[in-house]
Length: 401
Ligand SMILES: Cc1cc2nc3c(=O)[nH]c(=O)nc-3n(C[C@H](O)[C@H](O)[C@H](O)COP(=O)(O)OP(=O)(O)OC[C@H]3O[C@@H](n4cnc5c(N)ncnc54)[C@H](O)[C@@H]3O)c2cc1C
Image (tube, rainbow, N blue to C red; front, side):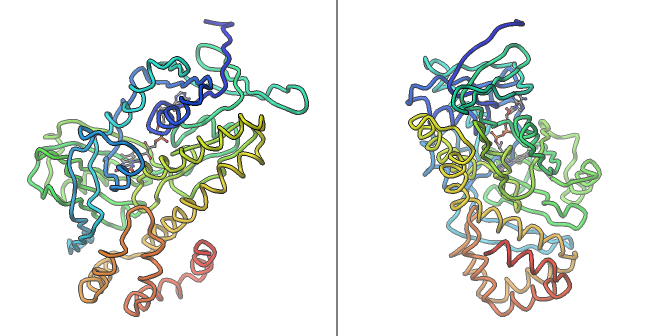
């Protein structure tokens, strides 16, 4: 294949949810799109707990077969096994993630202006100067060269496109098994512990008495996962199958560069409280698609233009909320094991449960956080963290601005 050069308007790297959805949003534009995916099959390997808020059905036209279950209760479990059940209007979906990744791929695979190159890897890119300071991108894949006006990195947490523009995501490691079990099929459970304080251990009911049981943390993932399974009395050897994966941690990165954009996990558009990225990347993709159409209409692919039309509006909607998630995650890291018990008791014995039910939002927590901070019990409880960690207080004020 050496020497093969293709031309396109937009080259998207990664045919997972972000890349496929962006392709779908753009295919009506008649721009020529190439989507490159290093795996031969879209949606595989499956690496997800698949819990997504009901906003999903507002953002996309969601076929019923993608929803495997819905949960009514979020159960939080402290290291000493004290639990807190939260009910709300959220009732998130448990999705068939493979089907979700394939949903837009199936709509696009036969379209005349979108071409998938599966089993092919993006390697590098360089700018090619054109007239009047205009640039194009020359992309090198494992099989060919592609010349494109825009390059979009939808290539996940370890984004190679991102690395080329100087983005290196901080990540945590996740492992998950699917298992038949006797847990409650209406509850999504989160187990907190100091040993895995980058996130939590989870039990997510897939339906038909199958549960997705996983854990994510920055180190000792195997040992922590085994301890977690022991704690919840699960025999690893009885698993149906096992998944692994990487979750980026932080707030939204810079996502605009000359002729280049980042979306989804590559852009760290992921909630630091839960590791969930699907809702955020769908919202980001809409802003990105809108910006791309404008770029072609005005023949302007500059960083400044992309920043104005993608990064800024996207930040206004999801960036601030991602900062709030990050702040909450950092606060939880300061919790000692007994702090979880104390916090759960405060929530149980006051009207905070009602506030959470009313204002709780899996994706947009800022409103709830402000409501909670106004509650004297919560405020007094949190004060000790701010007094002990004045730098954290300053950072929080900066993040919540
Ligand atoms: C264990 C686990 C559980 C999770 N649970 C949830 C959850 O319950 N709810 C939720 O909302 N989110 C969850 N997430 C996060 C969610 O899966 C991600 O936010 C989402 O998959 C990001 O989509 P993406 O398209 O940006 O990137 P990815 O899904 O990571 O896809 C990137 C794609 O790019 C391809 N690629 C990478 N490099 C190259 C290259 N050089 N050349 C060509 N192709 C390349 C990859 O093969 C992949 O197909 C979970 C993640 C993990 C790991």
